[in-house]
Image 1 (cartoon, rainbow, N blue to C red):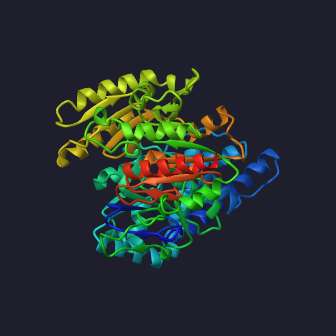
Image 2: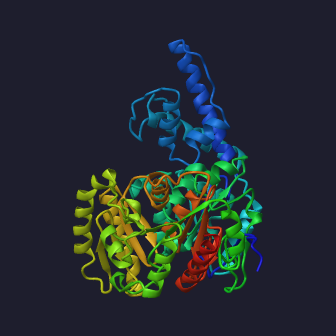
Image 3: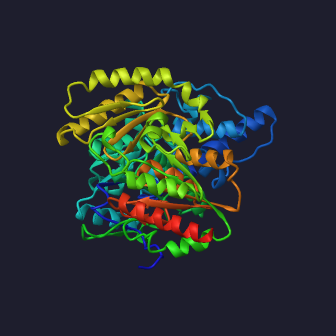
Length: 528
């Protein structure tokens, strides 16, 4: 097999739904919005400059639009741009008239300008986007539309494409449901909930940086960035798994057996490409980071049943004699230390919130500790509201709460997710993530497996050019680690079903992981 990755393809086997942003992805209204924003801000800034004798600096329809307002709810866009100019206005009320000098007043003035332009110019669509949506629907893949705009329904009707989407969640719904705006993932997670799909089995298609960030934070199976404004690098850096300039570059498989994604079952095998990997490591020290569940052990019905085989333990111990080895897991630190049972390696539990090493080294995230009262209250609420659902398992970890639904009847899964979403909204300091048949509530801070790996590399003085870090994992949560090592390391995804990944290579299952680690140990021993 070639060690070269294939083109990107979407298939029913990999995904249940694709969620499209509206402006700039499906419809060509981004330019209309940008023009309305410029009309609003230029008039306001000119008026303000005349009143305050400040220099008039007009709104930049490229830089300012993309950085401060694109993809955000209208009032948040107003506030963000004004802050960039050191202008502070009262927030006001959504019912403020357009001539009132408040955030809401300016927002309503912008909406008035947009509707006038919409009525006079109409709505153009991207033909390739409509064609892709029709192909997805023909293969049984659900499609939905999201927009921060409250004009979404009017745009869809004007363009004549409302019937292409099973679900619509827009700015009106966001207010009614108290959803946070992008880059928070609320609007996408609500859309997935209404579609009845697991975010890990859904794709987000976005052209805005804030939208890409939202898709990544929501742990969606794939985030596709559409670079219509020469912003491919920015979209990639902010979490897009795939970046295209037009949706014509995407394909839809007509067969369930076809893999999909830039990283899937056709990704080059780490076993078959071991020689290539060894060449990359020539002259360098290796640091190997391993996930536990689904990587060192198979996925099982209940967490306590994931017992490490003695043969795998011996393999990891053998590798640890030749290079630095760490296990990075969502499990609590004492739990993963007990299950692995090797003193010579490092451990990062709770997705990296709690880290320990072989010589008594220990670091516990103080940020995470601050969230313990929130987790306690959320745990109590989940236990009370999910008590009547058979098969649900609530696993309290120190820095998170895992809600397992692998044994829940199919018709009850939507109820489980609805309750989890309700509890998350009631405890806004927590965020929801997803994995294999699991929802998880965690502290809403920028800490994940990727940051844990980076911290470990720095703490062990391995954050140097002569060190090659390798991360092996199977779950969506491991994608953060793959992305963290894209520039100077190697990601290897363990696939039990095809999905896009930021990893460079693949392994089929824990048995192949063991073979790979054994062969890697043998190569290192040959080097002496």
